[in-house]
Length: 365
Image (cartoon, rainbow, N blue to C red; front, side):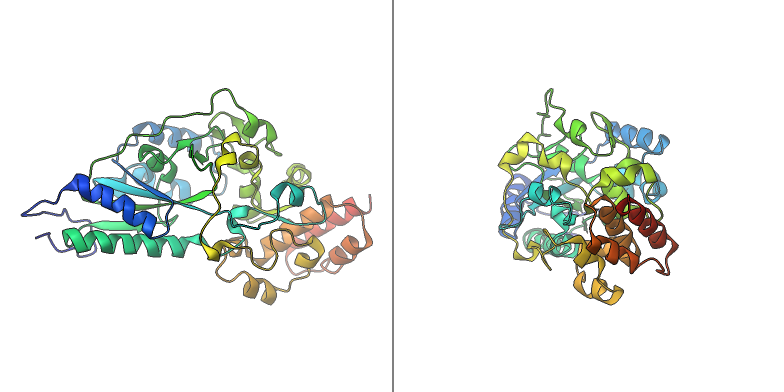
């Protein structure tokens, strides 16, 4: 019998230990049955990644993301975050929905707003966490109570390093995980556990001499292989940053109003990207190519209603208007753009007013 699980990662003890090799194979099969594309198992040693993280933080490349440093080394030491952790089960889930407007076409239409492909439909956090809990329930049905905790961007976890060590892919030069059979358009989640499961071989890197992701970055946020300055990254600027976007970075943002996919769009490995089988990831409100003027006209009530259950909520209404104002400033000169911007000149938010004034100056030449 296993020891009871009381909410802490107490070490599981068995009078008749299960066949862990068979259990590991079953876990991977169950994960696929639950809708994940793949699962792998790793240990907890992240020494090299911890050093890389510390250097990144020391260089202030995390910008205003104070949470990246808030928990000390717990991010790179799973057993300190959840005492008793011996293994991490990593899973991935593809997110590109079938029928989505071509990303390059939207980026090429300066009057449309580009939303990162991962954020077009339902927020993945609760969906994946719920399925990880179901995976844990299947494991419990076999081994009895055991120590575990599910994470999907919900705690200080080095998810890409753990997924790499679990064989799910390698960390590319743009710092995104790449899978040889599925590219990089997928979400990651983890199940920390005290079960001594056999671990998988880490994935080897296959970027070679390719530097397309570095060369394409509109704001030159990728300083070199595996070196990302988040303060210049469009995903950071349009989502994480809560104040004013630095003026010298506004023009390079183009029409990207929530996130950026350029470094993934040019990655050769994404010719193998798989469409998702999850219907909840389908685009909502035509956000895979909606016009900027239309989106800028949303009231706060409309924004909150239409983005309910979506990752776009993270930027907030103020950030939403700020981002679209920048995109309108980068759009071709038009009476419609000017009219939309002028309607927000007296907006209560000083951040919105600042970016509207900048955009109007651009529209007026």
